[in-house]
Amino acid sequence: MEPPQTRYTRSGDVHIAYQVLGDGPLDLVYVPGLMHHVELAWENPWHASFLRQLSSLGRLILFDKRGTGMSDRVAGFPTLEARMDDIRAVLDDVESAHAVLIGIYDGGALGALFAATYPERTSALVLAHALPRFVRSPELPWLETRAEYERRGEEIVRHWGDPDWFADKWFGPLFPSMTRDQLRAWARYFRLSISPGSAAAYWKANVDLDVCDVLPLIRVPTLVMSRTQVERSDIRTARYLAEQIPGARLVELPGSDHGLSWGNTEPVFAELEIFFAEVAEGKQWEVERERVLATVLFTDIANATIRAIELGDRAWSELLEKHHDAVRSQLGHFQGKEMDTAGDGFFATFDGPARAISSACAIRESVSELGLEVRAGLHTGECELIDGKVGGIAVHIGARIAALAEPGEVLVSSTVRDLVAGSGIVFDDRGEHRLKGISEGWHLFRVSCSPGST
Image (cartoon, rainbow, N blue to C red):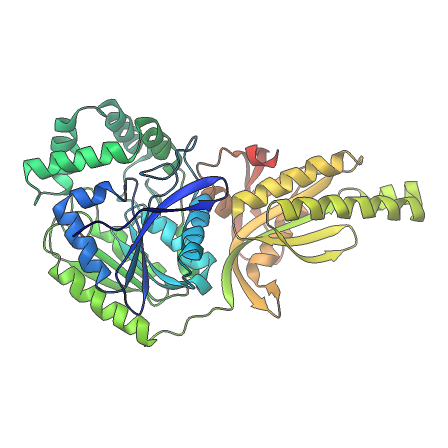
């Protein structure tokens, strides 16, 4: 059987390669890990067989994330935010209103963030051998240390041209059911899917990636799957994911092969068929579409009262109008939504934290040309949608952070910092703070460099 045709859609300035095959009541988006190549995938018989069987359960949508496979190569390592844009671009191009996301390994973090941010586009979420972060934390003490993770990344890049090393040292332990020829073929597939420079950038960016705070905000049906005896994949990570995601179902499968398409796939498809049937029939879950993950931005003019007294009512009113025009221009440029304006302050929301930071920095630079300084505070969290407006604790946290910012400062929560790994945004630590009216302490960071603001 011939492989499906490769098509392209644009996500911003980047061409994203994708394929569509199968039919059924659900659209299924396969969100791969680091490596993927929509055309080479069909050269591996066992993987091609898995994809065809998956397409029997619904309309399967395969795509290469930017920087990999048949999609455009890009400088550095794209953020999760940019890759969410890629998924939306593909869904729009195939006229899919909503789909099940199947996140494999690090594709799970992308799928989780997408489901929390765009619940209206997400029918359900499947996480297979997925990780919410890559290095050890108090919540996940069984993960590699930062130093161990970085050393392994350096070793992989150093042996990039050695298929035997890949077969013996990396893929062999992960896929014990593969033959020697299959391991070498998979190593070739990996090397042709991504360049060594991109792989190095990937490893560097993911060391700071963390979507743990996002997990409790996922409001779509979720299935967490993992085999129990996979080397370098502790089953406790799958259990953690299922505990953190409201209503998630955990399936622990026997076996020692990483991923879903190797080893005994019969129990994998048995669970997927049950889960997809329930999702298609709308059983068991009541998805809260009125709650979404968003980044909130608050800005106000520093020393506004003093400036207003100095200038007088008329001159201050004219300056304030120019300030508002500058802020709205930057909000529009970075896809922000103005929620409210009170006096000299703005409240806006974004569907991505990197865009929100870039917008805040651009606002700061724009109004400085007017002789003004602004304070800005950002937080990413769950927001309630009420008659086109947003509310909830995340909004209050964002406002409190803005109140702590110094003139000319863009201040963000640790959640925002964790979600923009790979963006090139540089932060300075501002330490732990108690926010007025918020019981828990928050670690805050000052934005010292935002490449996207220019």
